[in-house]
Image 1 (cartoon, rainbow, N blue to C red):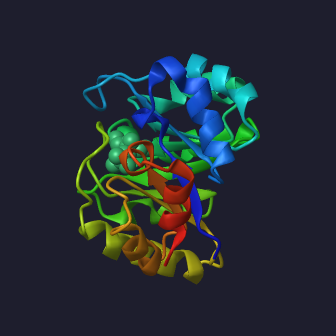
Image 2 (image 1 turned 120 degrees about the horizontal axis):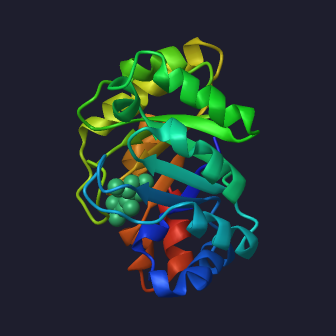
Length: 222
Ligand code: DX5
Ligand code: ZN
């Protein structure tokens, strides 16, 4: 499968976000990963739909919006209107509301013509999102607890990626995008790819690299 690289703009200089997004595109990245945090589901607050709207005209790359927020259903319209190409929502934020909330949120995302995905935290079995694989364009396995860039990769993610790839194949979706997010660098990227991930998010490893484009290329290596 083709390996896609999704730089996380969380690690960019927010005062020069347009340039950062252009750099992603010029460097051969495949998606722009936008980390939306609400100060409740996770401690920090980052940015909302206005940021997505402002970077939309700056790049042709798909905008991959990772919602680390409570009550995601209430926010989908804003991110869809802002120009998101894919929106992912956390299982944990949905499960505390109701059993059907995750599926309903994914259906709502699709109703706007936007791709959708479900996310699981490191302490949640990936099997918990198997029931929505049929709806998902992508699934996201967190390899750190969300909230901050620059954390260490949690090895337990590898087994979950493997299970996700096997289950996706078993339901006739062998090419489902499986994204991994957190602690991806030159050492952990090949492990994630080997396990079956094909979309790699990277924040600090790219934005702190002396040569951004070379780092994008480096992460694709198996
Ligand atoms: C974590 C975010 C990640 C993060 C990745 O809460 O969802 O996207 O920015 O950053 P690195 O690659 O530095 O772990
Ligand atoms: Zn993220």
